[in-house]
Every structure is written in C-alpha cells, then in structure tokens.
Image 1 (cartoon, rainbow over the protein chains, first blue to last red):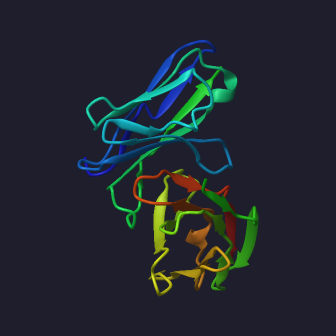
Image 2 (cartoon, each protein chain N blue to C red):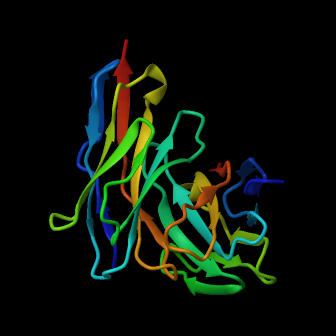
Image 3 (tube, helix red, strand yellow):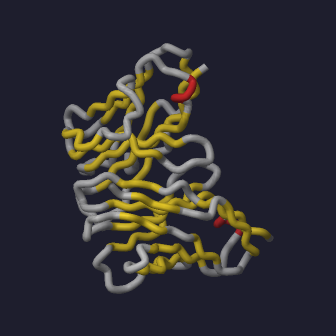
Length: 114
Length: 114
C-alpha cells in the first residue's frame, strides 16, 4: 500500500489483558514514530525508531509499554496488563530521514480497555 | 527538549474570513523544522505546511501560509478565505534535527461558521 497502515483499527481489551498494535510504514521510510492521543488532545510522543534502532523511548508511560522494529520496517507496540488509562488512539507515523519532510500518519488504533 | 505551545483551545470564525492560529515553540537546536497538521473529526492527520529554521521566506501552500518570526519563536498558521471544510483540530509540531522526534502541541479546535 501507499500509506502507513495500522492494525487493528479498533481493539477492546479487558483490564489486565496484553495487546499488540501493528504499524506498517511507507516503504523506504527510515523514521517511525508512535504517539498516544487522548480524546480532544494532541498526539503525545511515545517512542521513535530510526531503522531498527530505538533512538528515543522517553515517552513510554511505564514499563508495561514496549515497542520494537526488528527489521527496520514493521513495528509493534505492545502494552502489557492493560489499564483503563491506556484507552486512547495510538498513532503511528513514518518519514524519510530528512528534516524538511513531513511525517505520514496511519489511521490509528483506537484502544478501549474495559 | 523541544516544546510547542498553542494557546487557543478553540476558535470560531465566520466563513470566508481569514484566521490565524497561534503557535510558539522552544528549542535550543539551531536547525529545526516546524509543521502544521489538520485533524478532522474522522481522525486522520493531514499535513498542511512546513517551515525550516533556515528558510528565508515564509512558507505558503495554497490558502495556507506560515507567519514565521524566528526571533519571537513564533510559527502562526494563517488560513485565508476560510471554508466550512476547514473546521477541524489544528496541530503545530516541531522536529529539531533529522535524528529527532516530532513533538506536537495540544492543538486548536477551529469552527467555521456559515
């Protein structure tokens, strides 16, 4: 596909359940970003990859959150023992490794923890 | 660390009027890029315009222009001749260097009135 693809689009998880969110970036995009967006708020940075290297994970809210991009393409954001406050839209974006180019976003995964 | 401040939570503007959305930023890096995104109620993030820190001229893209005042660390978005379809959330963002993450502001919700 031509754009960033995220799956699933919607996920309902019971509190305490583990979830895995997938992001397929645009082919050739070196940079990959994960954001968490609460309703009516701006995207909050979670973590950032350049190829397979996780350069910044300062935004991950707790050690229950883990992200990987083992082959420098597809990335997975994993949340262990989900809690209600994890309910949000999780956005993935990718870009070229060039400053003056925008990041392209996926449609997001809406996670609801019940 | 980079920071974006958007001080207008919401704005109401009459159709066909011009509108300015405020954005101030903070970074210690001399090389950075500033972005504006639009997020309609459908949730997709749409890139609007980019301004580089070394660009001599203000960026323009159709009805969108960026009023870049470097000394004041200001990057306001100007939308000319507003349309009903401009109603959405608008986010300002900064990327300080190609090896860095993109940080977003909290956004401004723009309502265009018929």
